[in-house]
Image: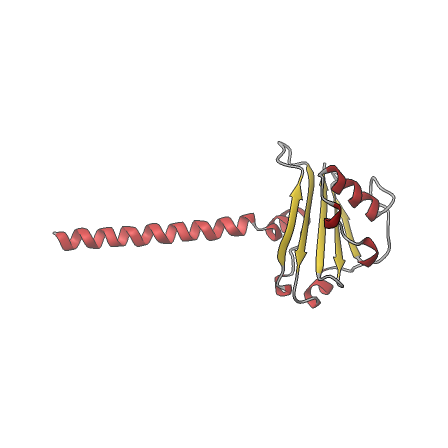
Length: 155
């Protein structure tokens, strides 16, 4: 009888450990910012670039999901970043601002991002998108610093 009890306890323990590991993996995938970007904007960060998040700040939780989010990523390989978008070096208008720099600066100031965490706009290439609800995203790529900056404003 003791052998059967030990066997059952061992099997239950293995199943519990497998379930915990599985839940951990699912949680990591669902909370990964690249997954969130894909859900909200239809693109993911290029995993082949071997990116690492180095800074993140947002305006906090909100009932409707509105607010500002800002992330900085460091990467090792720039070719996958180059291929992510049709990057532009032109400063264009957004829905509410006269330029990408003006929009991002306003958003970052609204969430109290320290000045040293701002991108060097003159070194960046840009990609911009808006949605029907007037939410906006501006992705900035500074290849001289191996950094990708992502600023989002959800309405």
